Length: 143
Image: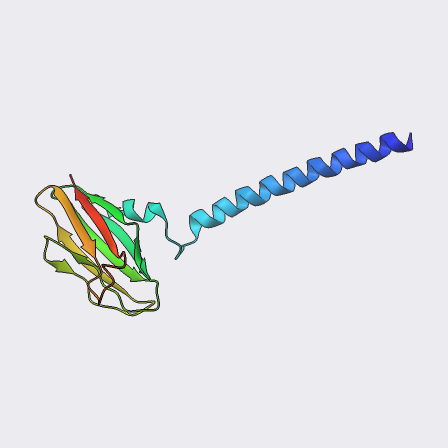
């Protein structure tokens, strides 16, 4: 009888623990959905403020961009926010479009607004020192 009571108690504790874990996971998801994050997220590229402007956020550190692939449509107005999450100065230069952010220090950001009238693949990179050669490159695809 004592052994049966022990196993029933263990089963109840496991069930309660499982419920607590699931509740914590669901609460965590809700907090993450409603809390701005400085962690790179693929969703940052697809954010739109309204139907006419596409917001894209590109974060940089030593020596990479996230995301390293961004997309836009021909004729679409783009607001690109460049955030330097690293310790060294960085910038974002888009080859072939004659666009570049300011060179900014860690924790700073700069914004570019532009519209691309022609489809194509455009490279972007950091033009500071040898940062490009060290891997600070990405691609803008315009379709």
